[in-house]
Image (cartoon, rainbow, N blue to C red; front, side, top):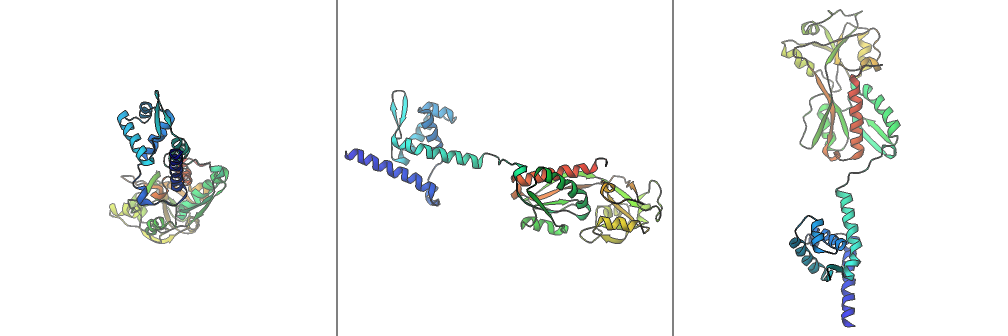
Length: 336
């Protein structure tokens, strides 16, 4: 009778230990002493009831499994599995803690090994974007149409930021995703993807400004320019292009709004050089002409997205990146 009572006390204490480990805060000093691989071995033994087959299941040798069983017996202070003919039968303690061990392993596998499922139709939340004004009018209408159809619970908030402030805004979690069309100094923890490369078009009003059918860079440099810059200055890839050919252009206005630029061109002998995108699809181009910018070598810009790597595996963030990329890439498709 004393032996039976002693075994029951031992069983109760072992089960209590498992419950305590599950229900209260972890004592990390004690937790470091545990080898969680032993729980994997325990589950395999409980499933197979055979040391050799359990070893095969885990792709380890039988001696290694026997060693794991010995360590488990020490850890639990119980035989756990006793030989009965060709099988290893679990003790009462092994049967009692088995479901809890399996639950731990399953929860760990779900947490560490499986990708989060993502259903756009039921997703909710707010995505904060930074998009230059010149691209916002091209991107947002199509992006919002997609989201309202596929993910109506996801909202968008857009805030244009100066290039020099983007990295800090990403680091401080003020912006989730930035659309950029300039070289941006990034840090090791930033991610960048390219969605589109494109050249440039020269846009002007023939009623106010005359240009040859295929103007040279010198012809363009002789014109007064209006530029698009949400930083408020005229430094750009284009200025570097002119400088490389010993030229410079005179910028008479730097405007943040593409609509304002087009309105200004219709009334003044000015020229603007803009990315070769579907401007005419969304902006009023009445009275304006657009011709390709020709240079040797050709000049292009890269339009892409930048984000902090903390969002790499966020399913909602990944979905927005993919949809944003599809919208930007479509900007080169013929309008209509």
